[in-house]
Image (cartoon, rainbow, N blue to C red; front, side, top):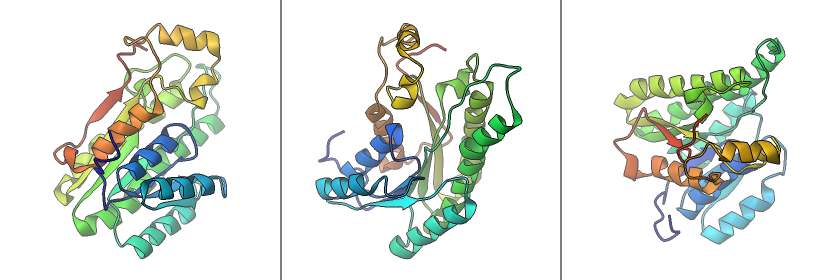
Length: 252
């Protein structure tokens, strides 16, 4: 997509987990397409430089908002701020997530709580606060980031895949409930994407994974972000309840 398209001109968005990888790319592509973007991260000041740079580069506003998505009181304050400053919200991207692997028999209660707190419970809370704003204008797009392992499963990832499977169920149910309000809910299920998180598995494992990708390469964060732009734009006005794989024909 080119900057001349400005597919999100005048829209207000919030993107969680914006400090790296897929979230960072979504913020940039949204800004490039004209959106006012509230970019979220946990670490204070981690988005300041990027926000200034993207705001100037794309002649829009990228506004950092710092909070842990598992902290409901801070999450609520972020939505109150958006309402106070913009009086509307058009797009929510639930991107923040954690991935920790454990084989069956090695899964702890702490691991389960940590992953579900961020990947599932925070997704529901974010969605609920977004709907309070979107329902007033009878429109909006909620984009949840799931995973190919949430669709197909993967050995060693029983908790992570369960959390991403829950995101898919959240998406399908919310889409049905919110359609009468004009609010669309979809999910993106990325495959093997070239991010710092993915590369942490080590080069030998990366090459083994690439051998299972039909297109023969890792995906890029930009390719996931382009799909998010489509789902946030009016091009997808009749699309809801869908799980869109961005995986290059990967098998897991």
